[in-house]
Length: 476
Image: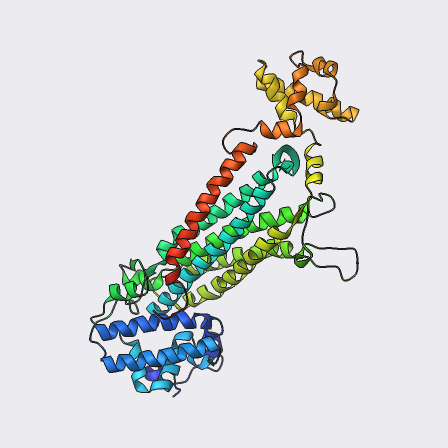
């Protein structure tokens, strides 16, 4: 019979194809450090509760520390023979210190062990992602501060609608990423629960101290039901859902950069460091990195749907299907981290063509709503004002001119309510400054919003600093 750590009940070795199909070590080895972190807390608790002797605890701790050093130095060799990260490390431990290493698994199962590892790992990645989004958010605020007087057309249906400040446009994305950070921070309290001690399904007969382990590992508390503890993957679904929303926001921003950097828009120029050329057309400068960010959103969405599908019909409690929770989560973290690390410098280094933005904002009758509002202020019902201005726009299109280019007599032919003072309302700057309502694009409102966002940015940074001590891959 083979050397599996669980092989006592079996009379045959596994089929030659089963070993590779069943093993998860190819991808779950990324959990090595958190697995050892959890094991160090577990063995310390076994000693505290008198389940293992102090000498046994010392031997196991020393062995785990030696393995941890090898992991960090890249000297560990993981094999599919031992299936997963937990069995690989336990085998290394027994090789390192002898049979006493087998006592580490007292009072726990791989079921609660893997749950612990994933909680520790997602907790760490949650804080790292908040930090990366915080950096991107900071770049958006910096650009918004620097571009406060730049005006461009705002769009609905990808048609010019009304002129807005570039700062106002950028702060819309800052708001999206704020919500992303808030979602991650809120999810942290559901990630930060300790499942260890739930055993395989029903707990353990040993007099363990679950609360002590949870406190040692920096958790806020423990799962109050052992069956839920080993089978819960809600926190991973929530993580993937939040990650998908973040990718939507990154993809939308990437799409605007792709459009804006085209010759048709010519609003911005992306730095050469984030573009590529064509193998055939020497004149090309392609926004490949924003395009890839846009494209990678699909794989993150797919991982969310994949895990939902895996979980939808699983009976309690642990089933091998749950091994499928990891690769999608790991790939999502890699994908999202890469996108965030690139988007910040792309925005920071882009050159803004303020003159082109302003020219575009002055075209396309973006001041039509202001003319309608002008008529409303003089007593005309809005629907009638809307119709009057619509007919004026049609007239201007036929004549090849803008609303501000019409003579007073031309304007009064459509409505006698229009006076000489109308021209002071139709300039691009005046149209933007007229939007003084809360959250509007007038300068005073944009500056107020910018100030509020800087305060919120500082609070999020304080949260990161407060939880960071529990998230680094280190021994407790």
